[in-house]
Length: 451
Ligand SMILES: [Zn+2]
Image (tube, rainbow, N blue to C red; front, side):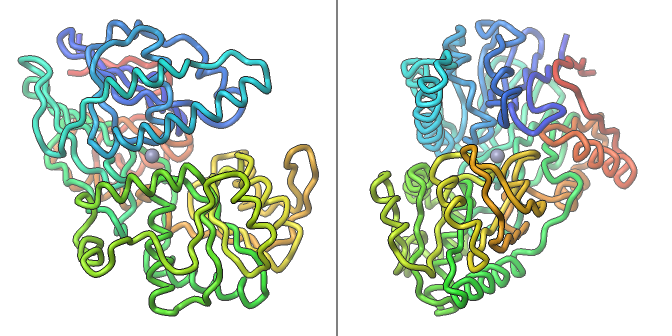
């Protein structure tokens, strides 16, 4: 029987984990962490719904934790095959998994919890990576092969295009928001029989890239005029590098006042180093820029604070200043300390530049909370709270719809996944009503038979 099993990233954004079976060959696509609170913790600790030893190969779409975070557990539970991805994904996965392991170890020690996996399990993942270039066929057996196609979401991100006998199945992973200052446009899929796609922004639209830079410039100017601090919670991958590249440009053209900019996240600092190693993956515009500037991510005034001591020196520096720290959901000790200091003062601004999960601290601030609880302290929110959706590294509803509309029919089914339920259902409705293609929203645990 030929099937797709949905074991994560179905009916929710995180935990992406699918098993595609074709004539007995079992290929896993992504093995992500469930994120967001206690329920997610419990999901991560549950045994896999299948025997990891029965999986023949894994294809990874990209290096975000919700796509790779359970790989070490999978190895611990017996998986012994290859992990295919692009080269940047393999490099970023090392950085991401090491960071996740450090955080997990501290938390488990504090709560006296059993860790999800050991350091050896994590290192075994690094040894299993088998990097492949984009657009090159990789045969798994006589009837199944696949190509990695650029999905333009973060550096090295890929859609997985399977060819199984005469069928084509595409797993999009996350699809990027265009145009990107760094990445090339996503690969255009011409034909496919089954599409499994993301829907994080399936019910929303972003502002344009031009508007976002103007907004950023205005927010920096206003905060500097008030002699306040601008806090920008950032994801370490892509958002950080895009912001650094745009700040670089604003500084170079004297569009913003010269104030110190702190990159206060070891993970983002390490990830930026990986970006510098893979400049050949950047788009033409960024490549052209590189010809007269050796480093797109560095500019006068930028200070990277790697250690805790360095991080603490930021507090002594008088405002105005800009602090970029992870992550947008508001968890993690550095960003939490910056929030505690910044939120009560109306001269400060907290700027969100992307997706903040439902019920996260970040989402409560975006939704206008007047006070928030951080480390059991109640903090009044008097700082300005701003949000620029154009910095998202996810395609919005229109871009997702156009992606599907660009594929030649007949697609038998679009499986709408990796979104909050309402977002997935909205997108499935749009695909059915406006493009006339059958679309469904699978549930966790569904195993759907393919024709
Ligand atoms: Zn992602």
